[in-house]
Length: 135
Image 1: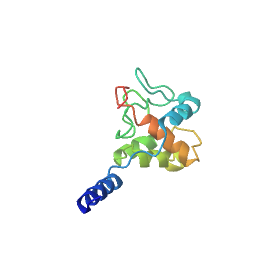
Image 2 (image 1 turned 135 degrees about the vertical axis):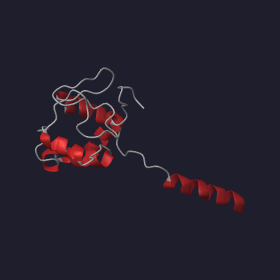
Image 3 (image 1 turned 180 degrees about the vertical axis):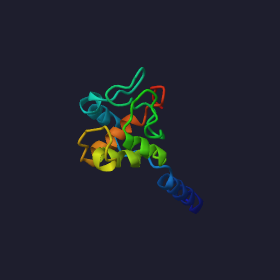
Image 4 (image 1 turned 135 degrees about the horizontal axis):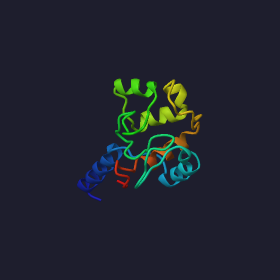
């Protein structure tokens, strides 16, 4: 391979290494966890509506306590005033232990201690847009 060819190959590899990070989780595994754990209180996908908890469509980038028609706790409302927005980092911290992250939240779920479970759930739920369709 010529020097020019090697330089092009190296620059392409570097571009791949510094490109946007992809979620580490597995959406299929996250769907199974969602069905067995989260679906007790939350809905997601086409036609999803608030249930025991708010629907999770469009959660990536959504401000906390902003889903219309859901009665949020005072703790969640206070976080909204602080500008709390759901993203991979805020979700993973929260879902580890919701009551520890936002004391007073209505979510009584004890949390997901395994990092891989949190990554898989995020990979699954973050693929849904606000209308319930997938990105």
